[in-house]
Amino acid sequence: MSHFYPIFFDLKNQLVLVVGGGSVAWRKVQTLLAHEARVHLVAPELSQELKELIDGKQCVWSCKEYDSQDIKDAVLIFSCTDHEEVNAQVAHDSAKACRPVNVVDDPEKCSFIVPSILERGDLSIAVSTGGSSPIVARQIREELEAFYGEEMAEYLALLRSWRPRVKEKLAPEKKRLFWERVTDGQVRSIIKSKRLAQAKGVIEECFRSLLD
Image (spheres, one colour):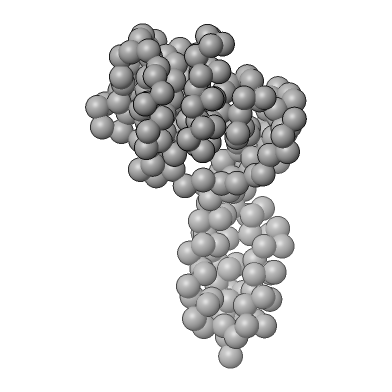
């Protein structure tokens, strides 16, 4: 079993090939489009759910069987078919062309695997079991979802909004002190209680107390 290296990939406007037209391909395409990838679907038939995602621009469909030329220009490749010979060919062609490939439910044919992902605004937590048990990865992600709630999106957005001001106005030692104070749990707890205005006030007060 490979020891996979974790990485976050910016897929905006990058071309991704998805081979297959069923429910697994549909889930992959949904996630890829949510991350602003350009998706090329190759399959002789598509489920109705997948057809609804085709727009001829961000998501296009080639109504045909897979062939080796389909991997051209793709930065990532997913093979989501029920046909072992097709999946094997996609994996072989991708390896030959030095393209990252994921064959669903067959980690031995993968050069990358997709973790179970928790997203809360700027927060992304990826959970992987190295392909040994996607179910366990999903269970761990669900446990994390209970701990890192929807407040994380507003919390991180608020912290991000303060970065330019802190960088410009505070001395290096006071920058560190500012970030330690505003990330000690109080601000997040206030936001979790639906009191965003109060949280903003706490940060403002902390900032002013550190001004020279």
